[in-house]
Amino acid sequence: MTAVTGATGFVGAACAAALVATGEAVTCTVRARSDTRALRALGTTVTLAPGALHDRRALAAAFAGCRCVVNCAARADDWGRRPDFERDNVAGAVNVIEAAARAGVDHVVHLSTANAGGYGRRDMDETSRGKRSPSPYSRSKLAAEHAARVRAAGHGVRLTILRPSAVYGPGDRRWTLPMLERIVAGAWPLVAGGRARLTPLYVVNLAQAIVLAIDRRTPGTFILTDDVTMSWRQFAARCARALGVRAPARSVPYALARPAAEAAELFGRMARLRRPPAITRYRVIRASKDFHYRCDRARSVLGYRPDRDVDGHLRACAAWYRRVRSA
Image (cartoon, rainbow, N blue to C red; front, top):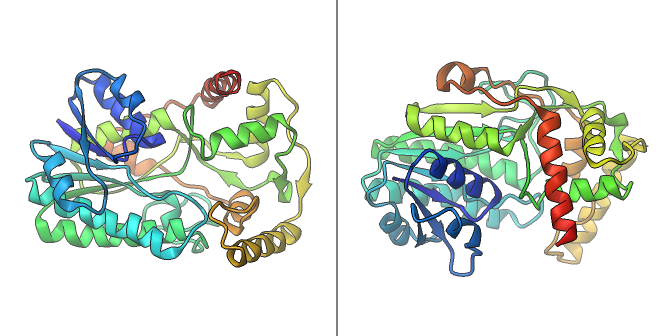
């Protein structure tokens, strides 16, 4: 049996579904007000257990009898107060390690982000150090990695850290859905000509990697991508083709987009906005600088073999988008 935190989220739900497909029994920690309908639909091999990240006792009870804990829970916004990110991502990761150790679980798979290693360079691997992201999310995930390593070592827990790149797929209402909506509306501008390179990661490939990490029990850090490189212009054009609309062509210079984002963030802080402004520094940087990573270590050590059919993945995203719009 495997425990999954954050199982009502986009990545956690995909992880739970992938584990059930292998015949694994899964315990999913959920908060009191979480929508658990999708998890319940997975069948009787899924157990729902109360367990917020701040409650080590509840987490330990949920983890009892499990062979591994997969920590998918995180605050994944690009806007918010730094203390909130540190509480949910850093302290939350420590709590999962502590609870796993208390429950006698000796292996934790922790979901981080490729951005933790920085950006702005081509072919970045697990040892690369690029420019630091201004995103409190990325910074808190790097701090969470360090804290998790220290606690895992202290408790003799085997720790596997997975660093996914730009995750997309059906069910993602945080990034995939808004992107498709804006492309359909003709309101998805490219930044700096869309020349920046990215390495996308389809959520099914990520779920496959999580299953491999559980089975291999190999400690260490692994970057995950679709093993495909493209520019933002190419990725947006392929999204548009899957949707049957015109590809984005309008481009905004970085020299204009960056000050606009800084002004929007300043207004957002002064107005104490809870939701992110329409444009942020992170979004501008993400769209105009290289976020380019290699998954060679995951391929060689974990046996990771991603499905590289990006057009097929985007067709699945477009079909999901149409279902959402017609609901």
